[in-house]
Image (cartoon, rainbow over all chains, first blue to last red):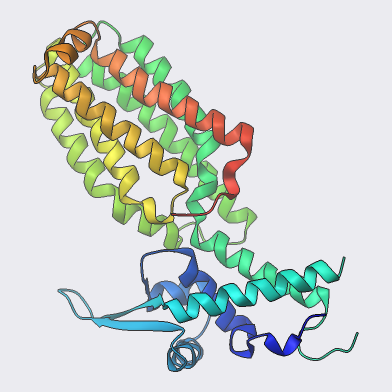
Length: 99
Length: 214
Protein backbone atom coordinates (compact mmCIF):
# COMPACT_ATOMS: atom_id res chain seq x y z
CA UNK A 1 0.00 0.00 0.00
CA UNK A 2 1.31 3.40 -0.92
CA UNK A 3 1.36 6.24 1.51
CA UNK A 4 0.11 9.06 -0.72
CA UNK A 5 1.07 11.65 1.84
CA UNK A 6 4.62 11.01 0.64
CA UNK A 7 3.78 12.92 -2.52
CA UNK A 8 5.52 16.23 -2.45
CA UNK A 9 2.74 18.79 -2.84
CA UNK A 10 5.26 21.41 -3.92
CA UNK A 11 6.21 19.35 -6.95
CA UNK A 12 2.71 18.09 -7.60
CA UNK A 13 1.53 21.46 -8.91
CA UNK A 14 1.81 21.31 -12.73
CA UNK A 15 3.68 24.59 -13.17
CA UNK A 16 6.36 23.67 -10.65
CA UNK A 17 6.53 20.10 -11.96
CA UNK A 18 7.16 21.51 -15.45
CA UNK A 19 9.91 23.81 -14.17
CA UNK A 20 11.66 21.00 -12.32
CA UNK A 21 11.40 18.73 -15.36
CA UNK A 22 13.01 21.31 -17.61
CA UNK A 23 15.78 21.95 -15.11
CA UNK A 24 16.33 18.20 -14.71
CA UNK A 25 16.56 17.66 -18.47
CA UNK A 26 19.82 19.52 -19.00
CA UNK A 27 23.11 19.93 -17.21
CA UNK A 28 23.34 23.56 -18.28
CA UNK A 29 21.41 26.23 -16.35
CA UNK A 30 18.21 27.69 -17.81
CA UNK A 31 17.76 31.39 -18.34
CA UNK A 32 14.50 32.92 -17.11
CA UNK A 33 13.45 33.89 -20.64
CA UNK A 34 14.05 30.36 -21.95
CA UNK A 35 11.95 28.87 -19.15
CA UNK A 36 9.23 31.39 -19.87
CA UNK A 37 9.10 30.61 -23.58
CA UNK A 38 8.88 26.87 -22.95
CA UNK A 39 6.28 27.07 -20.20
CA UNK A 40 3.91 29.67 -21.65
CA UNK A 41 3.60 31.36 -18.24
CA UNK A 42 3.36 35.02 -17.38
CA UNK A 43 6.40 36.63 -15.75
CA UNK A 44 4.58 36.97 -12.43
CA UNK A 45 3.37 33.40 -12.38
CA UNK A 46 6.78 31.99 -13.28
CA UNK A 47 8.58 34.17 -10.72
CA UNK A 48 6.16 33.02 -7.99
CA UNK A 49 6.80 29.35 -8.79
CA UNK A 50 10.55 29.88 -9.01
CA UNK A 51 10.62 31.67 -5.65
CA UNK A 52 8.61 28.88 -4.05
CA UNK A 53 11.06 26.28 -5.34
CA UNK A 54 14.04 28.41 -4.36
CA UNK A 55 12.74 28.82 -0.79
CA UNK A 56 12.79 25.06 -0.22
CA UNK A 57 16.21 24.79 -1.89
CA UNK A 58 14.95 22.73 -4.83
CA UNK A 59 16.48 25.15 -7.31
CA UNK A 60 19.32 27.64 -7.30
CA UNK A 61 19.35 31.03 -8.99
CA UNK A 62 22.36 33.02 -10.07
CA UNK A 63 22.29 36.51 -11.51
CA UNK A 64 24.66 37.42 -14.32
CA UNK A 65 25.29 40.85 -15.70
CA UNK A 66 28.12 40.00 -18.13
CA UNK A 67 28.48 42.20 -21.18
CA UNK A 68 24.87 41.93 -22.27
CA UNK A 69 21.61 42.48 -20.43
CA UNK A 70 21.38 41.03 -16.92
CA UNK A 71 19.84 37.58 -16.67
CA UNK A 72 19.10 35.02 -14.00
CA UNK A 73 20.12 31.42 -14.56
CA UNK A 74 18.36 28.58 -12.75
CA UNK A 75 19.65 25.12 -11.90
CA UNK A 76 18.30 22.11 -10.04
CA UNK A 77 19.97 21.60 -6.66
CA UNK A 78 20.89 18.11 -5.36
CA UNK A 79 17.95 18.43 -2.92
CA UNK A 80 15.61 19.30 -5.80
CA UNK A 81 16.87 16.41 -7.90
CA UNK A 82 16.39 14.01 -4.99
CA UNK A 83 12.84 15.25 -4.42
CA UNK A 84 12.06 15.03 -8.15
CA UNK A 85 13.35 11.46 -8.35
CA UNK A 86 11.37 10.51 -5.23
CA UNK A 87 8.24 12.03 -6.77
CA UNK A 88 8.76 10.01 -9.95
CA UNK A 89 9.14 6.91 -7.79
CA UNK A 90 5.74 7.50 -6.22
CA UNK A 91 4.15 8.06 -9.65
CA UNK A 92 5.65 4.78 -10.79
CA UNK A 93 4.20 2.96 -7.79
CA UNK A 94 0.75 4.46 -8.43
CA UNK A 95 0.87 3.28 -12.04
CA UNK A 96 2.03 -0.14 -10.90
CA UNK A 97 -0.84 -0.69 -8.45
CA UNK A 98 -3.32 0.71 -10.96
CA UNK A 99 -2.61 -2.10 -13.42
CA UNK B 1 -9.52 3.60 -3.02
CA UNK B 2 -10.04 6.93 -1.35
CA UNK B 3 -9.24 10.01 -3.36
CA UNK B 4 -6.93 12.34 -1.50
CA UNK B 5 -4.80 14.59 -3.70
CA UNK B 6 -3.42 12.43 -6.43
CA UNK B 7 -4.42 8.91 -5.60
CA UNK B 8 -5.62 7.69 -8.95
CA UNK B 9 -3.78 6.16 -11.82
CA UNK B 10 -5.28 8.69 -14.25
CA UNK B 11 -3.80 11.56 -12.32
CA UNK B 12 -0.41 9.87 -12.24
CA UNK B 13 -0.63 9.37 -16.00
CA UNK B 14 -1.49 13.05 -16.43
CA UNK B 15 1.52 14.12 -14.34
CA UNK B 16 3.77 11.85 -16.39
CA UNK B 17 2.35 13.38 -19.56
CA UNK B 18 3.40 16.81 -18.29
CA UNK B 19 6.89 15.49 -17.57
CA UNK B 20 7.14 13.88 -21.00
CA UNK B 21 6.00 17.03 -22.79
CA UNK B 22 8.57 19.12 -20.96
CA UNK B 23 11.33 16.60 -21.65
CA UNK B 24 10.45 16.65 -25.35
CA UNK B 25 10.53 20.43 -25.43
CA UNK B 26 13.86 20.52 -23.63
CA UNK B 27 15.48 17.98 -25.92
CA UNK B 28 13.87 18.90 -29.23
CA UNK B 29 16.87 17.99 -31.33
CA UNK B 30 17.14 14.37 -30.31
CA UNK B 31 14.41 13.34 -32.78
CA UNK B 32 15.97 15.14 -35.68
CA UNK B 33 18.77 12.80 -36.36
CA UNK B 34 17.80 9.56 -38.06
CA UNK B 35 16.25 10.50 -41.40
CA UNK B 36 18.30 13.66 -41.78
CA UNK B 37 21.51 11.76 -41.13
CA UNK B 38 20.58 9.15 -43.75
CA UNK B 39 19.70 11.87 -46.25
CA UNK B 40 22.95 13.70 -45.42
CA UNK B 41 24.96 10.50 -45.80
CA UNK B 42 23.41 9.72 -49.18
CA UNK B 43 23.90 13.31 -50.40
CA UNK B 44 27.54 13.17 -49.27
CA UNK B 45 28.19 9.97 -51.22
CA UNK B 46 26.59 11.54 -54.30
CA UNK B 47 28.67 14.70 -53.88
CA UNK B 48 31.82 12.59 -53.41
CA UNK B 49 31.11 10.71 -56.63
CA UNK B 50 30.41 13.91 -58.58
CA UNK B 51 33.41 15.79 -57.16
CA UNK B 52 36.01 13.01 -57.36
CA UNK B 53 39.04 13.99 -59.41
CA UNK B 54 38.23 17.69 -59.09
CA UNK B 55 39.76 20.35 -56.89
CA UNK B 56 39.21 24.01 -56.14
CA UNK B 57 35.79 25.59 -56.78
CA UNK B 58 34.47 22.81 -59.07
CA UNK B 59 35.06 20.46 -56.14
CA UNK B 60 33.59 22.78 -53.50
CA UNK B 61 30.52 23.64 -55.63
CA UNK B 62 29.26 20.07 -55.54
CA UNK B 63 29.68 19.87 -51.79
CA UNK B 64 27.99 23.20 -51.19
CA UNK B 65 25.02 22.16 -53.37
CA UNK B 66 24.80 18.91 -51.38
CA UNK B 67 24.92 20.88 -48.14
CA UNK B 68 22.15 23.17 -49.39
CA UNK B 69 19.91 20.20 -50.23
CA UNK B 70 20.43 18.63 -46.81
CA UNK B 71 19.77 21.94 -45.06
CA UNK B 72 16.46 22.33 -46.92
CA UNK B 73 15.50 18.76 -46.01
CA UNK B 74 16.47 19.45 -42.42
CA UNK B 75 14.38 22.63 -42.27
CA UNK B 76 11.37 20.74 -43.61
CA UNK B 77 11.90 18.08 -40.93
CA UNK B 78 12.04 20.71 -38.18
CA UNK B 79 8.94 22.44 -39.59
CA UNK B 80 7.03 19.14 -39.66
CA UNK B 81 8.10 18.26 -36.12
CA UNK B 82 7.24 21.68 -34.73
CA UNK B 83 3.80 21.78 -36.39
CA UNK B 84 3.06 18.21 -35.25
CA UNK B 85 3.75 19.22 -31.65
CA UNK B 86 2.08 22.62 -31.94
CA UNK B 87 5.30 24.48 -31.23
CA UNK B 88 6.82 27.45 -32.97
CA UNK B 89 9.49 26.78 -35.59
CA UNK B 90 11.85 29.34 -34.06
CA UNK B 91 12.01 27.45 -30.78
CA UNK B 92 14.41 27.87 -27.88
CA UNK B 93 15.97 24.56 -28.87
CA UNK B 94 16.69 25.73 -32.41
CA UNK B 95 18.06 29.06 -31.23
CA UNK B 96 20.28 27.38 -28.63
CA UNK B 97 21.53 24.88 -31.20
CA UNK B 98 22.39 27.64 -33.68
CA UNK B 99 24.10 29.68 -30.97
CA UNK B 100 26.26 26.68 -30.10
CA UNK B 101 27.01 25.33 -33.56
CA UNK B 102 27.29 28.44 -35.75
CA UNK B 103 30.69 29.75 -34.56
CA UNK B 104 32.40 26.49 -35.47
CA UNK B 105 30.47 26.08 -38.74
CA UNK B 106 31.24 29.65 -39.87
CA UNK B 107 34.91 29.53 -38.82
CA UNK B 108 35.46 26.07 -40.31
CA UNK B 109 33.57 26.90 -43.49
CA UNK B 110 35.63 30.05 -44.02
CA UNK B 111 38.96 28.36 -43.28
CA UNK B 112 38.11 25.50 -45.63
CA UNK B 113 37.21 27.88 -48.46
CA UNK B 114 40.58 29.62 -48.06
CA UNK B 115 42.25 26.31 -48.94
CA UNK B 116 39.74 25.59 -51.70
CA UNK B 117 40.94 28.74 -53.46
CA UNK B 118 44.39 27.19 -53.96
CA UNK B 119 42.74 24.57 -56.20
CA UNK B 120 45.32 21.82 -55.67
CA UNK B 121 44.50 18.25 -54.59
CA UNK B 122 46.57 18.63 -51.41
CA UNK B 123 44.88 21.89 -50.41
CA UNK B 124 41.52 20.33 -51.19
CA UNK B 125 42.34 17.55 -48.70
CA UNK B 126 43.18 20.18 -46.08
CA UNK B 127 39.86 21.94 -46.78
CA UNK B 128 38.02 18.62 -46.39
CA UNK B 129 39.83 17.86 -43.12
CA UNK B 130 39.01 21.30 -41.73
CA UNK B 131 35.33 20.95 -42.62
CA UNK B 132 35.17 17.49 -41.05
CA UNK B 133 36.90 18.70 -37.88
CA UNK B 134 34.74 21.80 -37.46
CA UNK B 135 31.51 19.93 -38.13
CA UNK B 136 32.47 17.58 -35.28
CA UNK B 137 33.21 20.53 -33.00
CA UNK B 138 29.82 22.03 -33.90
CA UNK B 139 28.05 18.79 -32.91
CA UNK B 140 29.94 18.71 -29.62
CA UNK B 141 29.04 22.35 -28.98
CA UNK B 142 25.36 21.38 -28.67
CA UNK B 143 25.96 18.17 -26.74
CA UNK B 144 24.15 19.33 -23.62
CA UNK B 145 20.76 18.81 -25.22
CA UNK B 146 21.66 16.33 -27.91
CA UNK B 147 21.33 12.58 -27.61
CA UNK B 148 24.40 10.70 -26.44
CA UNK B 149 24.75 9.07 -29.87
CA UNK B 150 25.19 12.51 -31.44
CA UNK B 151 28.05 13.19 -29.04
CA UNK B 152 29.74 10.02 -30.32
CA UNK B 153 29.13 11.21 -33.88
CA UNK B 154 30.75 14.54 -32.99
CA UNK B 155 33.81 12.81 -31.54
CA UNK B 156 34.07 10.56 -34.61
CA UNK B 157 34.21 13.64 -36.85
CA UNK B 158 36.71 15.42 -34.59
CA UNK B 159 39.04 12.39 -34.37
CA UNK B 160 38.83 11.65 -38.09
CA UNK B 161 39.35 15.32 -38.96
CA UNK B 162 42.44 15.54 -36.75
CA UNK B 163 43.88 12.30 -38.13
CA UNK B 164 43.25 13.47 -41.70
CA UNK B 165 44.92 16.82 -40.95
CA UNK B 166 47.87 15.05 -39.33
CA UNK B 167 48.17 12.88 -42.43
CA UNK B 168 47.79 15.57 -45.05
CA UNK B 169 50.27 17.91 -43.33
CA UNK B 170 52.87 15.16 -42.92
CA UNK B 171 52.75 15.18 -39.12
CA UNK B 172 52.82 11.39 -38.99
CA UNK B 173 54.45 9.06 -41.49
CA UNK B 174 51.89 6.27 -41.32
CA UNK B 175 48.96 8.66 -41.58
CA UNK B 176 50.62 10.54 -44.43
CA UNK B 177 50.99 7.30 -46.37
CA UNK B 178 47.35 6.43 -45.80
CA UNK B 179 45.95 9.88 -46.58
CA UNK B 180 48.16 10.11 -49.70
CA UNK B 181 46.03 7.35 -51.23
CA UNK B 182 42.83 9.30 -50.59
CA UNK B 183 41.41 12.41 -52.22
CA UNK B 184 39.47 15.21 -50.57
CA UNK B 185 36.28 13.60 -51.86
CA UNK B 186 37.26 10.27 -50.29
CA UNK B 187 37.81 11.93 -46.90
CA UNK B 188 34.45 13.70 -47.14
CA UNK B 189 32.72 10.50 -48.26
CA UNK B 190 34.09 8.53 -45.29
CA UNK B 191 33.07 11.18 -42.75
CA UNK B 192 29.95 12.91 -44.07
CA UNK B 193 28.78 9.85 -45.99
CA UNK B 194 29.89 6.89 -43.90
CA UNK B 195 29.51 8.29 -40.40
CA UNK B 196 26.09 9.78 -41.15
CA UNK B 197 24.79 6.59 -42.76
CA UNK B 198 25.98 4.46 -39.83
CA UNK B 199 24.53 6.91 -37.32
CA UNK B 200 21.23 7.35 -39.18
CA UNK B 201 20.92 3.60 -39.72
CA UNK B 202 21.39 2.89 -36.02
CA UNK B 203 18.89 5.58 -34.98
CA UNK B 204 16.22 4.56 -37.49
CA UNK B 205 16.52 0.81 -36.99
CA UNK B 206 16.80 0.82 -33.21
CA UNK B 207 14.30 3.63 -32.62
CA UNK B 208 16.69 5.41 -30.28
CA UNK B 209 14.90 8.72 -30.66
CA UNK B 210 13.79 8.49 -27.07
CA UNK B 211 17.20 8.21 -25.56
CA UNK B 212 17.83 10.73 -22.85
CA UNK B 213 19.92 13.82 -23.25
CA UNK B 214 23.49 14.42 -22.05
